[in-house]
Image 1 (cartoon, rainbow, N blue to C red):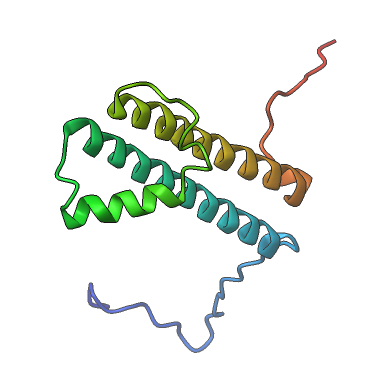
Image 2: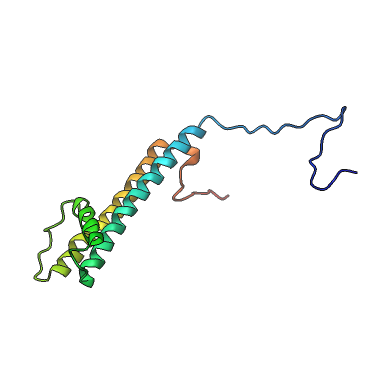
Length: 138
């Protein structure tokens, strides 16, 4: 009688069953496209989160001389998409909220549009997301 933890060994006349994993021809392309889209999503979300953290720090009145504040402000200055002076209210906190809030929303929209466009163009038709399905019933 075989032990519980011991794997089953085939007998001399017993056929060995091998598992064969078949990948279709589009496997590499689908994997590459999905990886690229995931990277784009992550980058756009990180940019939006950095902008939102900077907005929070400015509105909360954080110490501008702090190293963390300067790090976040440096990142935020580079990813505002040129929207720094779009809105010019008298209050600096409101200006930061409007300008960088719009930039954060635009980063999320850009990411969604890019990934949608890439998946619609680069993925084979069987792997694309279906927005609607039309069925004809008799």
